[in-house]
Image 1 (spheres, rainbow over the protein chains, first blue to last red):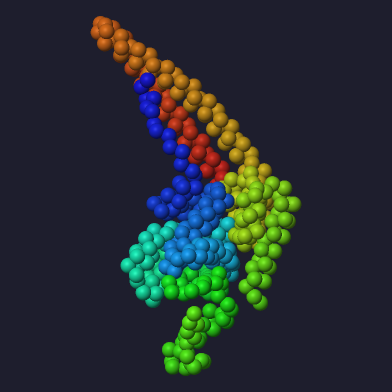
Image 2: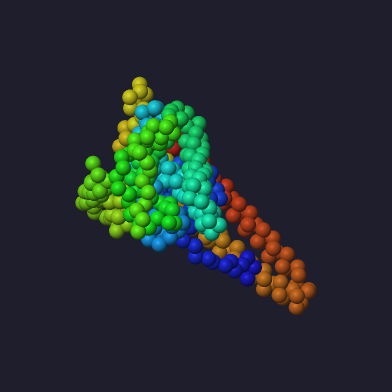
Length: 248
Length: 175
């Protein structure tokens, strides 16, 4: 019959469609968040995406040492990002409200989680680089630099997505204070994320390390470590010499 | 305070919130409970917003929030209160839904007729192939089909007029 063309039907889960939208057409994704369309489902998809992608990235980082560290890092990295997101995401609304931004909590949460999921997807796309580094025996410090660069690029991409969305929204409703809101989010995110990731370290461990703990013993806060590093750089040391592993 | 203690405290707060929301909402899936315990700062506002927004369209929510914002302004005396606005928005929604329902019925019958004409045309084309002398009657059938398709265009115009009316009414309510 004319017009009755057979179209192939492919059963694609809706969540994969959302991820596809996030990667291909973020404008539409942001419009969907603004309109508040099915945000609960969107948030679930983003949480799952972050958990899975960060587990893959963690496993890849853990593979530098291998063994049990693959599992440890695969568990810890999703915990760090999801924990940080949970504690820091409401800051966008809270600081924005204080600065005069017309914001809605649920939309803001969906936006932050979508941006983090986007960053996590970029990170997982860079996982082959980590495995390549392992394959060509990059040194520990080179691996650290590469990992920091990858996380930096992913973080900046997520931040750009948030800035674009909030700036457009602020232009539409004529409210101000979006810059302060984003700055507040960044400060809270960096502080919480830095401390949480510091508390749950290590992720990337030297291959020769004999035993790896799930979490290192408490050695003060991230701030203490940064202060100590700055002092060391100035030639002021708190101990006589760096500890060396005990010979077996 | 150790990390373990903070973790236990965080999960404890999540468990309490999950319990409270389970009692209040009475409809909570296992995934919702898990997300509430593990990510309560994200999921609790989402569940509360869902509950608050049940049965409300996005436009209605915007209208109500605009009215709430205008409560402190001198305009508040001439504006309808939230309850009146909710009733008006519900009436508007019902009316629009009714119009869309009748439009769907009309679309369906028109499309059925078009399908029928197309089927007749296919049969006619087969007959013309076998007996070219009856080609004249096929022309009439094609003209009928074209007029039906034009009728569908009228329906599209009617649909846009409904949407325009809805926008105007929403704007009136907001005013």
